[in-house]
Length: 99
Image 1 (cartoon, rainbow, N blue to C red):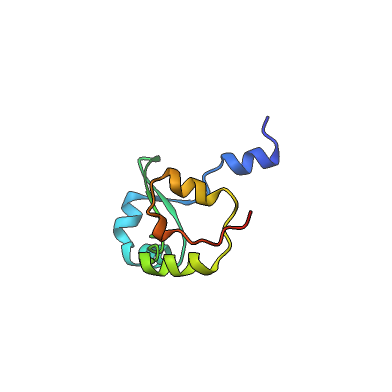
Image 2 (image 1 turned 60 degrees about the vertical axis):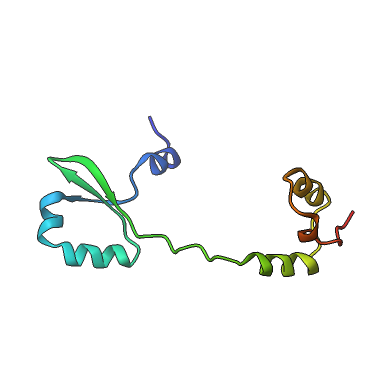
């Protein structure tokens, strides 16, 4: 017997949609996906695919900007040593490290 909490975690959180329904109403389904909904696509009642929203792309931060941020930020005590172990050029590592 599952507890309520275990039942919630074991259930599929996405709505199920039959392949033929997806084919017949693809525009509306994709509109719902673009608004954050997820679907499990089924064929003859068996799950075969998940239709989920695309995650937002990660923002690239140029190396120079990271260096600027690190020059004014106070790092944790072990960071400098970890960076040296990773063979990072010392010129890229700020001198201000809180100990």
